[in-house]
Amino acid sequence: MKRSFIIFPAVATLFLALSCGSGQTVQGNPQVAAAVAEVSVDSVKVYIDELVSFHTRHTLSTQTDPARGLGAAIDFLADRCRRWAGAANPDRPRPIVEKIYYTVGENGGRYDRIVDVPELMVTLPGTKAEREILLVAHVDTRVVDVMDSTAFAPGADDDGSGVACLLETVRILSGIPLEQTVKCLFVSGEEQGLDGSRHFAALARSQGWPVQAVLSNDMIGNTRASGTELREDHKVRVFSESNSGEDTDSRQLARYIKEMASIYVPEQEIVLNYRTDRYRRGGDHSSFLREGFTAVRVCEYCEDYERTHQDVRTEGGVDYGDLPSYVDFDYLVRNIRVNIAAVMNLANAPACPANAVIANATELDNNTRLTWSPVLGPDGRPDPSVTYQVVCRETDKSEWLPALPLGLSDIVPASDKPEFYCPLSKDNYYFAIRAVSKDGYPGLPAVAK
Image (cartoon, rainbow, N blue to C red; front, side, top):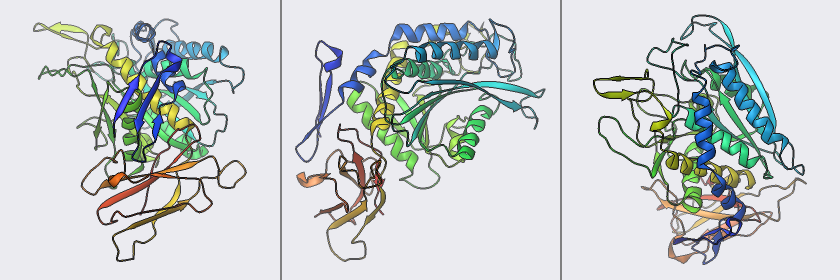
């Protein structure tokens, strides 16, 4: 499939196009393109400088000092988001900013006392609000001694970069109506053991949040690999869990992020990493995976161990510490754009089709016939505005082909009993179906089994 993009003088007329096997041209939505272009390097720099100014954001740091510690940082984030919420489009539901507390230290671990710890949830309500997409980043920071709650722990990249991503998402999407709800979770307790995300994941499970996808952004602003001196500023990793097969929902989400990035942020390559996380490291997406949610981690391609979890110092001629001067802001902006492109498309796309099956799986022939349940509209009947797209891949490949082989059409119109037939052997390909909105927003694919 050929991909191209045309840039016109006005951002609002930015269209990105890719051609499908059916001969149709699917245009990237101009509203998404405009939102992606709105990500500002100047804004992102200000966010990170402000976060670093709190000296430390350690989970056990002060909550009463107005200028230092986790309490001041959470208050700053809440104030920023409330201002954007107040200026939001009055024609859409207003964003909701909530400070939430949970208790740590009751079971020991990386705590020397029992304390109630704050975190922040910003909800951008959808106009339909059937499903929710969660964006996650951790506010807290640390130095070498994970129990040191007073030392200077700037956390510019880990995870000021992820927090900046969520802030910019709130700023931009507060003014854009989305069909599905987006929640930005600014969590604490990550460095002490993923406690803040564990609290939110348990809350989501107990309260029955209709979570469709979780994107955790943790360290997305560094481009240097310590030790090897490799530098990579146009690749970002998306980790998806690998414990239950090739076609888990988290794998589908990771592939979706890559596809949306190829349309809206083509200069940034998404590297699919089919592991839950890095060796000896873990992230907040793991808390949601444990609760059965679809979750991935977005993370820089190179890691600098002279920066993260370090005391700020110079030793043996080497500078240590997670300072803003080591963040590649152009790289960070591209990664924020990747998030916004994926979130906006997913928030406006139809639900994933259910009951996708290979209907002729028991027949000895060289064809494939697929059936699935139609996506339903608000009236509980099959939505007549939804079309379907069939994708496939060979059995030794990990990513869906951009078009069906042999020039076959991949578009199926709305129907009460949707069906797809093609002269491709079910023995040679995996197939999946996804719903596409009338405005061209594609949903997550459902693998036919």
